[in-house]
Amino acid sequence: MTIDTKIWTGPGRPAVFLDRDGTINEEVQYLSSPHQLRLIPGAAQAIARLNQAGIPVIVVTNQSGIARGFFTEDEVEEVHNYLDKLLADQGASIDAYYYCPHHPAAIVKQYMVDCECRKPRAGMLSAAAAQENVSLAQAYLVGDKRSDLRAAVSAGARGILVRTGYGKETEQELLREAEATGAALVTNVVDDLTAAVEQILGTVSQSQPQGIKPPKFAASFRHYRPEIGQRYPRS
Image (cartoon, rainbow, N blue to C red; front, side):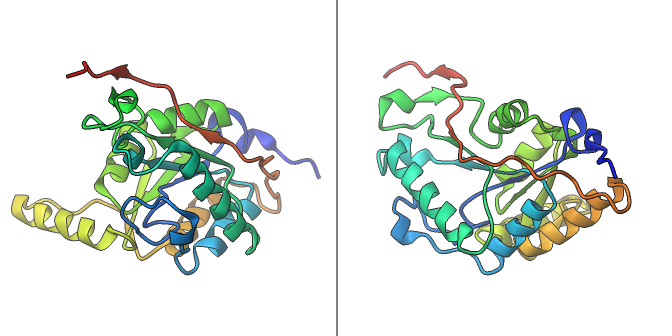
């Protein structure tokens, strides 16, 4: 049987963008070392399910600790290399990493940039969509913060809030705001990445022809820092 790859490549190709801290691994403020990295239970298996479905899995993470001088870009890459190892031990893999090292209050002046890549802006998602040949309209962004949800909206993707990491706090903030305004809470909230992937696969499978397995994404380790934005004036 011939696979209809038009569903899985080009303009309509789905992808899942994942926040890192609090979504894949346990939240550690300014995580700087592989020794601090602990996977959230079930996260590796959830990512493996996306791998098996041939859906690109792309990490998009704000790393302002670089701009604040807490750690370096090389140390971020070391963390990602170790994350790859932990996931590989459970049959899972990340197809690409995109991270933003910038912050307007940077201590390290070279990172004091008014960037488009820092969530809630959509620069990392836009760059990844172009480089990985996926459609933002068919994409999901899973994260535990309001900035993740806003980045999804800005990019035209679908956001899912998980209750891991800062997710429960974020949910409560959104509920209080909805109650204060009398509006319904329209945010898609699930317990964890496992539940998010279950929902995503149920939706994506509806567009897959019966009995046809999508081609496997040709994964290789890629680690990107989008060069987006203008530098702030030096003080």
